[in-house]
Image (cartoon, rainbow, N blue to C red; front, side):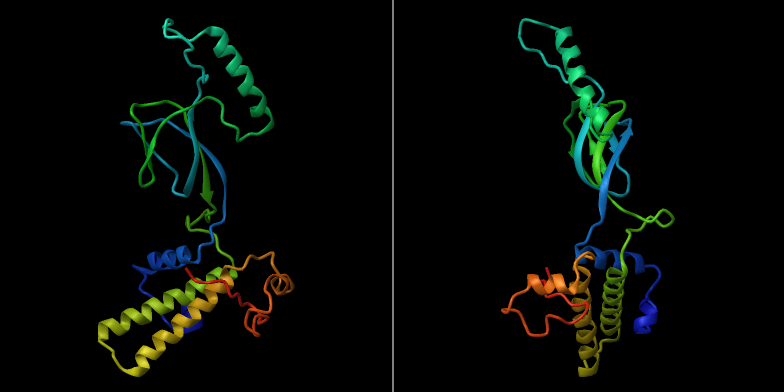
Length: 221
């Protein structure tokens, strides 16, 4: 799409990184809830590549604790009652996590523990990705915004390499940057919101051209 819209052939070695940077700046993340079960190795558990937000980390044992300092073992009745209570939500919700929540530290795609555990259950919000390439799924407006971001960065890098200081080179970079802002604003508008919905949301304090198709006046972060 970058070549089609702007006639620019981006560097294939850096295209994916630049495109992901543009996607991250849009701020749209299409996620759903996942459950991942694995065994730790050297007190570490590697997360799936699409993991974004961790909800809970647990192991499949009853979450029963000692109620007295005089006892060395957990009371059997407490274990039975805890297991019985955990059973009912599990039958109604497949994502309900049975067992004991454990402490962890989160790193770059890795969870760290104080010791090794078996059958660690991680409940997390994962980014929806393409099955073939493993890249985040995007809609048409997001794709157009990413294309304009890549074109802007490639044009800007080319000007830096050539040392272009002319008004034409600087104006071209600014023009593509402005288009990136417009496309980014449009991409942030949810698919289920129509122009009629936006007209009800925006009031007379906004500019008179707020009804332009494919345009949103949300601020850029």
